[in-house]
Length: 429
Image (cartoon, rainbow, N blue to C red):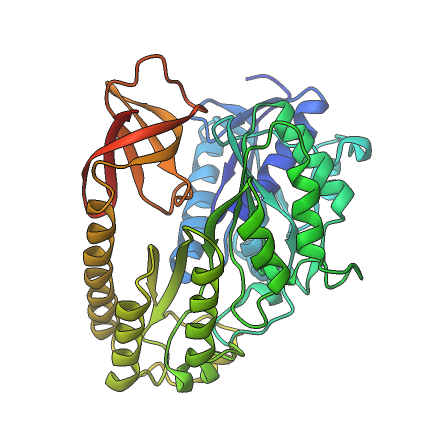
C-alpha cells in the first residue's frame, strides 16, 4: 500500500459528512491518496463516528472493531477515529480500545492532521473533497445549538451555537459551484438560529441572499428550521426568491402540549398549526417536511391521538418518524421510559400508514402534470432524480424513462405518468 494512502469512513448525518469532506480535502492538498469508504488497503483508515442514538453508537463501535481486525490482517497501517462518539466517550474508548492509533473529538481537524504529520492549510480551509454527486452538496452554516431539547445530546457534544461567517460560507459555495454543484442544501442543528452570535440583522436572510449571487447555484434547499419564533423575513424571501426552493424541513417532534413541554421544545401545537397555515398561505407551492417522535416518556393514548390528528390535518408532504430511545446525559434520561417498545413501534407504524395515504393522494394528483426535476443518477435503463420538493436520501425519488440525452445534474421538465406511495414516474416533457 502507498505510504500516504487514506480511506475515510463517514457515519451518521450529513453534518458529519461535511466534516469528513473537509478532512479529505486537507489530506488531498498535502499529497495523500484519498479514498472514500473504499475496500482498498490504506496506510490509514479514518472513521468519523456518530454518537447520537443507540443504533448509531453501535454502528460506530462495530465499524471501529472491524477496522482494527482489518489492521491485524495488514489491510490498514493505522486506525484513527474522530467525531461525535469519540467526543462523548473519549476516555472509555482509550481504555477499551488501546489498539486505536488516535482518538479525536469534533472540531479537531488540525490535531488529526498533526497526528498524520500533515500541515493544516488555513488558506484553503473552506475547501472540501466532495463525496456527494457533483451537482449537489451540503453546506453546514453553523455548529452546535443553544436549545436544550430534553431528548437531544447534541449540544453536549457539539457545544453552543457557532455560526460560520457569511464570507466563509460564500467562499465555500463558490468552491463547490466551481466543481459543478447546482444545488446547495443548507444544514445546521438549528437553521433559523443562524447568525444570532454574529450580530447581524436578519442573518439567515442576509446569508441566503449572498448565496443566491453565487454563479452556478440554481437551487437552495433549507433543512432543520425550528418552529419557535420563525423569522418573517425568511418567509418573505422564500416567497420571492427564484433560487430558494419551496421546501422547508421543520422537525415539530410532537403535537401534544404536555409532551412538547416535557421535551422542552418551547413551542405549542396551536402555535405550530398557525405557523404551518402562515407558511402555506405565503409561500406558493410549499412542501413541508417534518420529523416526529413516538413513545416519549409519559406519552398517553390521548397524546398519541393528538399526534395522529395533527398529521391527518396538516397533511405534510414529507414525514419521518422515530421511536424514542433514551440517551444518557439528557434530561429525558431521568424520566421513566414507560412506553413499551412494541407500543412505540406500533404507534410509529400507524403514523406512517396515515402518511402513506397522504403521500399517495398527493402523488396521484400529479399524474399528467409537468414538474421540475433534477437528475441524480443512472438507474439501469432509466434515470433517477428528485423534484424541488425532495431532498437526497430522506425523500422520495422520480424515475425517468426514455431519458434521451439527459444526464445526472440536468434540471429538466418532466411529465408525470404514474405514481406510488413514495415515488413518481415520468418522461421528459
